[in-house]
Image 1 (cartoon, rainbow, N blue to C red):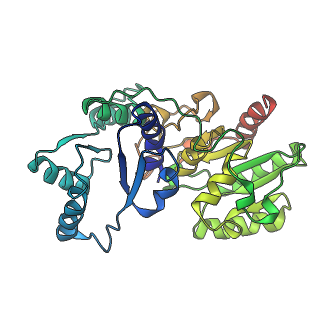
Image 2: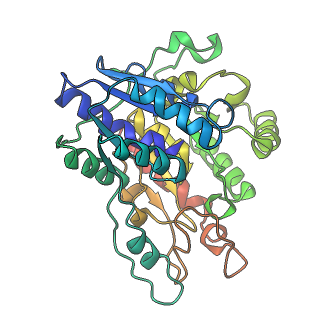
Image 3: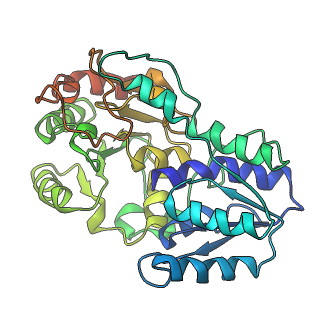
Length: 337
């Protein structure tokens, strides 16, 4: 989800700078809310790669469906096995095709265990920009939010979430990620929550994420603290989540999809980095390293996506981050609002 979300600022800017160009975004169905109201000349096409377009036969059927739209240019912003196959078919059909450069050599250097070169890599946004420039569409990214100024329409949310008083702070917390190397320990995140509630008695703490761990901890925390709201129990769709996120004063997130969802709504993020690092190029749009929480270790970063087991065995990159450090970053953002 994060990779798809990161395309939005670039596609938005492309659409507005070239209003006469018709753009179709192909992705999985979950991504529709990112693009359906992005610009009049942006359309969305969903593809179910596990069922309808499964395997080579399915990809051939998907290619025929795409070719019927008579595109004049094709941008592969994913560069994985399936998109590579579609790209090959388009190349054989003499379409104008370009694909993303993921700068894998540079990423290997910053994660090397013995000869680490901690150098900022081109961001995903720049990589997407480069694809469109090669297709003949230079893009200057000008993007703030997928919503108009003031955020999404709160009337689309359940009644209990439609009103925000002037004295309330709305703080989002998304404490989990796909891999342990990108997840702040729940016992420490609970301390963050307790410190925030003590500091901001009128705050509402919205807990974001869906899964077994989220169910266990969010249920426990929301029962223990009246200020905590388990959003999965109230919101039915990604669209509703984006609307709520657009009204947060700050989001606390891992290097995960929720950082990027908040970025799409112009919400500031306190991002927490463990095995991964902002230098890999995945910082959310409009977010700054100033608001990132990370500690210096010789072994960090050890992974681009956080999936590798900890070479030390203790995940010190996360375990050694003090809850107070995260709370201070939140305080810094709230003090400026």
